[in-house]
Image (cartoon, rainbow, N blue to C red; front, side, top):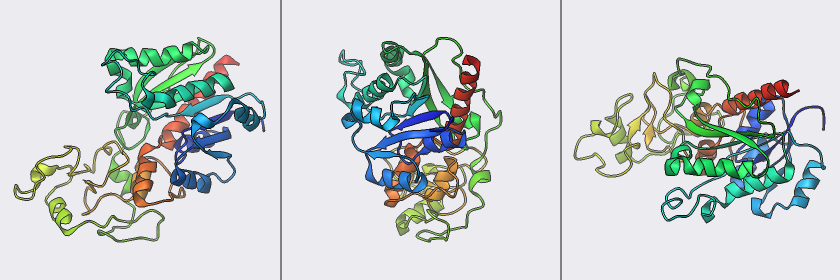
Length: 333
């Protein structure tokens, strides 16, 4: 290892956190994920990293000692999947007792083993207020019990230059109580989706381009007809009654509004349509909205690629968080 600051990326997915930390000058000890297609993408884009493809519960303390060569770890990052919101608190069960949140406890376990100076944990915004804030306090207490001071905050990534309205709770932990802070907002005016993706070649339904991952979904004639009625920024109300879907998610059958940031990118954006073209966005366009460079290639099926993009921490936001850690390190030195 060089004198570069080091990090471990848990639940690394395609590598959004890793990309941001690399761009900020950190060096990767190892990353871990279980999804085969996500791992294919990670390996392609980070050929020099050590990627462990296995269930994190099977990563032993001995494995970790070997992977880090028993050297000090500066930062552990990751966004453990947490599904147990509806149950936790409703039947007297705490967040961590819900088996679906086992992966959160794995994050805590690995922080306890590696004893990094800092950690960053990212998750969905509603975790912050869930169960009247008790869930957030419970999470923070798990880290306090292993010797970390923690602050948490919901950030809208659009305030930091990501061209989408993406609100996430960020937990920052460190061993010393003083000098824990969040990055300052960088943008009063948010970037629009049009400024980010307007340069890509125009595609019709089912068309491909020379640009990797810029492949248009093949929509049915019926779907193309429905979307043709929806204007820039419009929704299903613009579709004639006889064609309009009467049920389903109100966040579907809409068009992106060209002069605003994108809606939050998730793992399935097939029924949200380009502001001016009659199709859903390509994986390349979704990745650009998530701030991945065009050189970052996604592998696997098209739906797997969408999931990889939607699940990722935008690399730009990861880089800003990484630089924020470097600033905290300066204060501590």
